[in-house]
Length: 298
Image (cartoon, rainbow, N blue to C red):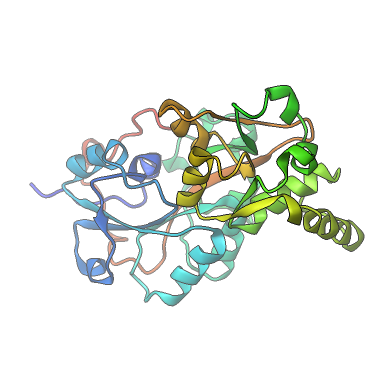
């Protein structure tokens, strides 16, 4: 029997982390009309079989993933794509209000999701709710700080973002090629808490602090280049990334780690929403037994 894809159930969004990875198809606009293909707009790293395989088998479907890097690119892709091109989108929480204002995402029923199982801070996460209505569910979160080469630095040497300005770091500070994480960490180093909610005077000071890093810069990197620059020693320090990069490298033998300096870190949050205009919006599981299960990923 063919199972239909349930886009409104908590199990699907709970499997959002599950959708994040592997046997997934390469996305194509042609998939929009295929009933058993779920079109997923997502950050890289969300197409591994470990994450998608069980969901695909359970629902007799395939996941087709279109990857983006940075919220601005995500907005550009969804703006330029015909309605129905994507069924779900995984976005950073700070971009959800833009998706909502542009009428790209559907309202969700809170009763469909185990929000009571979340930590209290996340049960009514402000960036997911608009006019007391739910539009996204968190799939994962973490913190961005300062990643470093452990053969060059001891943890105490990178306990402050000030390490980036030391002579030892000249020409060895890499930057993620997305302005929010990098500027957020520099803003924290300038004493701004919260780092993004600052006035014009603080922003001018932030720009000067950022420009003062020019002699220290090793380069600006895509995600793939961040991995290689840390591995080959081109960069010894990179602000605005986290364990989601260095853990994998470390398990593979690279001498890297991530620390949250004394000035603090930046929380990242990935949230799943259902995209308006999907031709699969009415496809529902016929019973609870056909719904994707949470599988402990909340």
